[in-house]
Length: 156
Image (cartoon, rainbow, N blue to C red; front, side):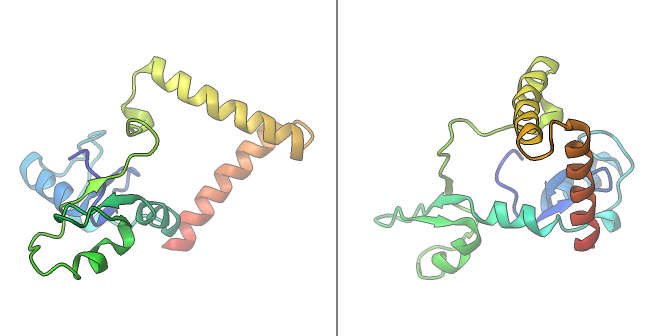
């Protein structure tokens, strides 16, 4: 839906979707991930790692209720909305985008845009490697990869 993830789930191929969006999509399109066409079934959907959920819940949203217009963290939005008696739908809010346009998923970008985004990351890793690991970029990349795998396994 290209909105902020509502009740996010992760597929076996590591793509993230709103729970209701992916379930509707699987029902209509069949048991395939809409991003990469990898086989995907509703029973395979899992909750994303806690670190991702923490980042998602720390996004700032603006309350749409008249004369409120308060900025609230997404994780506390439902609690904030309960203070408004006239609101029936809880999904209505405006994302406060403080960093320009929203970033797209890396795999959905063109090759040129991917190269640009990865160049920034490569420079950050290189700077860190030179500062902390004596210039061993490969060791830093392997460590990052292992940390990502460990975080995913600890969550499950």
